[in-house]
Length: 591
Image (cartoon, rainbow, N blue to C red; front, side):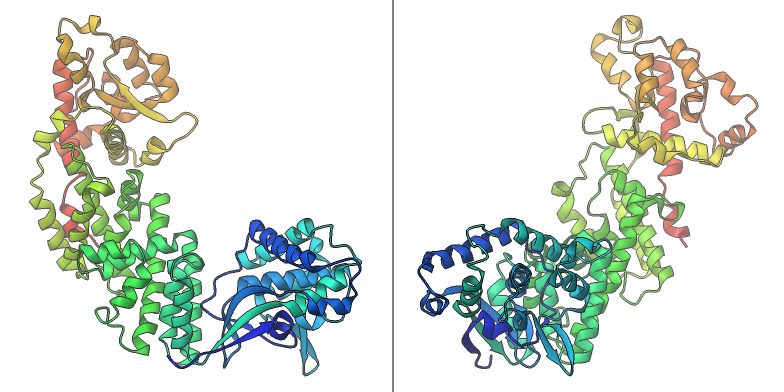
């Protein structure tokens, strides 16, 4: 690092007739009410500790100073690297004082003129309209809708200054306070010459995560290594556009992206889960970050995958036939999905390849979850994170054809046998959400094949009258003591072959009704095709259902009564339907 230049500067020396831009390291203006309150209390308390009613304004030059820390500037540009939160807040305070009582030393610290044009000394184009409204004391007429986070916060903090400026500093004292603020509030101004030196100081001052987020630190590091000014500014715009797309998911995305595309082992994965910006700096050689162009390409890749991630998140929240497996997995809160979906993608893959890869992996996750949970194996993050990371590495940067082969092999290695798993699948606290999903998928599949209108989203959505799991057999052992022992009754009643989905209101109304009474509801408009398949009338005048059953050799059968034998038949039907729904054909047929 070259020698840095540090000098004491008063607020007037820093701001008067100077022009500053915000460096790309800087985040939005994010001070909150408490920060402004603390600043006002500190400044006004220090001033009042020095002030005495018998003082003249000339006595202010003997008052004590107040140190507000360091300001880091890139000397060639006069760009603020560190300190914009304080300087912006002090500018708001100067505007407030100016609006209270115009005073000739304040204006040059807010505005300066060049070639006949006045502009703010902290010159940020997107904030100009807001700052003009504040300067002209017209903030009440300024509309903050559709403005940036910085603009909203600037307006709010100015109002906080209006609300919190102490009454003890009267109009009579304003000139004294302005003199003291301008001449006795000091900073240490640090000037650096190069981008790399600027970033080193920036990291030293902010790397504990108190001032800036890891994502903001990462941005600063990447851009500092791009030597071409024009390219750096272009990549700054690319980064900001990507973050705008990601909104509040930026850091979650970065962790998933880095694990998907770059992490070599579990230690890398663990490091990425913490200070990922440090990990990238330390692993820059492994990542191929060895030139200005490489850093620029890394930012481009960040933007490319940010867009892919946004589409994944949209698919998780909004059902579409083309991305249905992503939606299914999200309903089961499989939080490692994004990491796996991004793993096989090359940055230069076209849209068709990206879509194929995402759908293939999403389909695998769907099969994987089903195979695990029907065998009572947990799939929450804490239990499978390392396993999924190894799968992520296996599919990383696979072509579409290679991905099909890899995923098929991984699934085959699970040795999943539904004939063994499904008959033992029962409702409990662990299986509840998975069984609801299975019943929703089964019912929707039948609907799709027979009427063309599946209702999976409706079955899974939480509404004022949501669908719930219905026990076909009522919870009254005495009615079934001829078929079940007391010890086995609950197990048979909770078996997936004895369960349906019904709306909560219908479920509650049936309560402990006999099967014959329940069957009437199952076969009514309040039921659904899977529930109604227990009644004879469902098969009458329904040729599409008949063809569906014959074409797939399914064991649908109506039941006038429902006991152990009927549950066993229903289990066989569940297995047959699940074989149709959870199969590996799409690994070969995906387009």
